[in-house]
Length: 216
Ligand SMILES: NC(=O)c1ccc[n+]([C@@H]2O[C@H](COP(=O)([O-])OP(=O)(O)OC[C@H]3O[C@@H](n4cnc5c(N)ncnc54)[C@H](OP(=O)(O)O)[C@@H]3O)[C@@H](O)[C@H]2O)c1
Image (cartoon, rainbow, N blue to C red; front, side, top):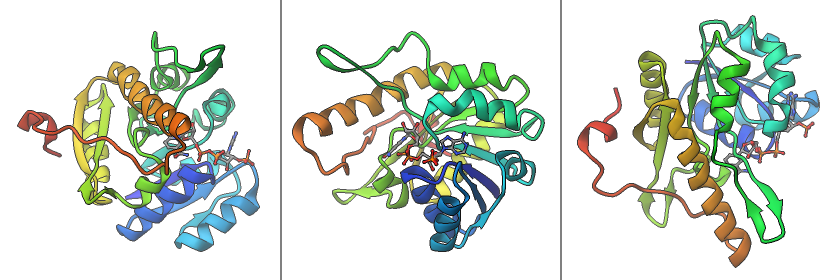
């Protein structure tokens, strides 16, 4: 699969590692071309000189940046992502008097779908820390890769991508389920922050109904 990863930080590097290991063709882009170059060199991916160039040559585009960059990036890749799959791997968190908070009245993925109305937005990879995006096993257990989306074909493709990197694919339903997926990630982050965790804990839905746990 031809995959563009926008963002060359923890997530960009981890997913580039997994995708190239699984035999996918990966191009990485970032604010700073040197960061993208370093990830590409380490993972046998390629570098694009702009987000639009990266998206133009890909079948699947992964958003692996802070969500605060989403509006600018959407403006850059609107044409290049028309009809394509855009995977939102981002998470949301703010900080209040009582510590970390999350607004679950909507989700980053749903906001991205509004920013890119002609793309097929799918939520995936966000519930896994970067450590487990590159290594799908935690505590000897194969972690789940939860996928939400409104376009059945796009979701099937992403479920297969999730499975290809060694995760157990789980279809959790429409894009609106991203609110809960972002909440799951928030909880895992909050627990690791509060307890000085090793950032390797992950989610596994045990005994899931067969239909949701089977990749296409
Ligand atoms: N870290 C995790 O374990 C984890 C797990 C799941 C999901 N997530 C989510 O995934 C996203 C990325 O997390 P991260 O930890 O990888 O963040 P990070 O290490 O800060 O990396 C973010 C990357 O995005 C790039 N970027 C920012 N704006 C950009 C733009 N307009 N165009 C191109 N590149 C841009 C940054 O470049 P510059 O540094 O040059 O700005 C940087 O390379 C976040 O939304 C986070 O919530 C993180």
